[in-house]
Image (cartoon, rainbow, N blue to C red; front, side):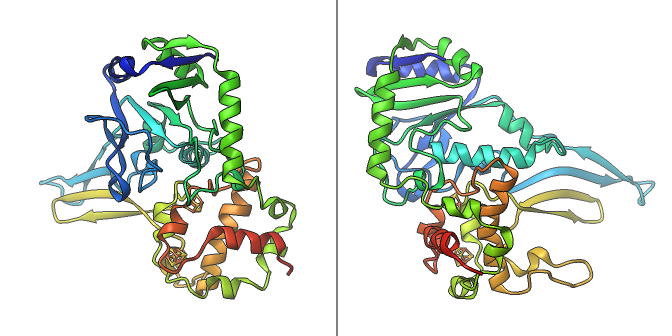
Length: 342
Ligand code: SF4
Ligand code: SF4
């Protein structure tokens, strides 16, 4: 794959070429207002990350997946209308490597050799993802400690970085290469510069995969460890950690109807809610907070890596650490899991 540069004065043409008949999204706004939105103002490259993860673009908080109405002369019959996946050709510029990696984890949940979720598939596959590497670590980030990195490539079509007020770019997939060729980006040899910048960024972040011993431990050894009641004790069960997390993907499906018809809605759900696992019989296999909190961390750090060739369900984006009202920090929990004895 090829590397390219775009000089400062060529940026407007570059973004116009990226848009070309597609929806172009880029980080807009500051702080808690920073989100991926249609690019319609000056681009800032110094944001830490978007407040919410980008998963909502592919897996909306609430999504109408089916509508139905009753026939006037046969009220017991419903007519269904599949509403499709609401997808459109899109380019995202400026997704952080941690979030692209998070989307790649969810992609293997929504599309695998057993299932294909059509609502996810259409949106994910019609989106070209251009990542923006992190030259300096932000205080809340720990991607390297979770097996990723500030120049991570997983889930991206192109990796970009700020260069002399313009951009350096590395194509990572044929789709990314094709897109860059269609712009006026100039081919360049950036391999050694990228390697050097990556090394600097990793060193500045300071920790490289701190929690490897979790992979070596048996599930039951981690599961039965005695720290879980204390770990769970401060949790309020609010679910904020899961709603902000780029890899949390649980949902609930509900039909909302009246005498004329209705709609089938898919809504984000959370394993931190006691209702999440209640069976039709009323039995709840995770009745206590300790079981629910343990499930969240075991899922991120043990079950997902088992199913996804060692890739963790935590990307180190730091959102749950910042947002948790009870100050529960996944790094501390991972450290306890790495040391735990049953
Ligand atoms: S954000 Fe914190 S308090 Fe809320 S459910 Fe998650 S761990 Fe518990
Ligand atoms: S568990 Fe927390 S730090 Fe890890 S990816 Fe999810 S929100 Fe980010």
